[in-house]
Amino acid sequence: MKKRFIAVIVLLSAFQACKNETRVSEDVSAIQLNLEVLRFDKEFAESKPEDIPGLKQKYPYLFPKQYSDSVWIAKLEDTLQIELFSEVNSAFPNFEKETTDLELLFKHALYYFPNYKAPKVITVISDVDYTNRVILADTLLLIGLDNYLGKDHRFYGGIEKYLAAGLDKDFLTSDVASAFGKTVIQLPSDRTFLAQMMYYGKELYLKDKLMPLATDAQKIGYTPEELEWAQVNEEQIWRYFIDRELLYSTDNMLAPRFLDPAPFSKFRLELDNESPGRLGRYMGWQIVRAFMDKNNIKLNQLLNLPADEIFKKSYYKPKK
Image (cartoon, rainbow, N blue to C red; front, side, top):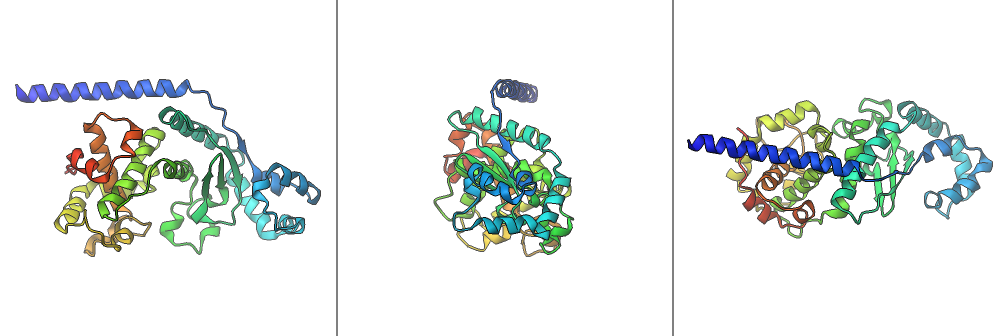
């Protein structure tokens, strides 16, 4: 009888969650948003020297005043720049799918953060500045399209493979969501491993809400195989963190071992080479998900909660 009662509760909870998701989807669809997207990369590459003054007037934030027109004219004629544009134009002959994905992302942002103003999107060529491939500054979103040509592109030959793996258009919207997350999630005030895990857990949970159609692999920047490894080994990862009392540690080396981009996580065990990097972020994500499953609070409230409160009220148990 007790098992039957629990099963009914679980089914009712699942039904309510599905009902809530449907309501959110309907409300998001009703939001009016005409996202402005400007292909500066195309405009610049197809310009002539006499067009430079007009471009400077239209995009003043992309032309630092200390550089004369001769610098930009030389750039127009530079063979490497021409090749960069050719490759970008081949990968992004239009920006329709990306625009649709970004509009959906920002509609969800407006749903959860009604006072937010969607930015103007400017696509650029950044000379493969992959550490700054997305820049969100107030009302402007700059996207360096030459950072999304695919992990095996020849332009990325000198980049570490684990970094090049993220240089694919499949991760473009996710990168934008990360940039948005930095504007609404405060950096942790303490230095514990748990606080840092929860920071990234909040960011990834935010992606759950802003990118409901994306895969978990896209949200965290894993391959499907890496995500499966994390899921299969979740219990072992958690036991490792607990047995070594890492959660409240302030050891500075825990970030490069389990949070920062890396070819693999560093348990200092034989399984290291099999593991994906950033497993601390993955675990933080699962804890935040567990917390939100058990606590009826709004998204913006979650983002302001202390890490310790989230952890204790999550009653997190790893999947076996």
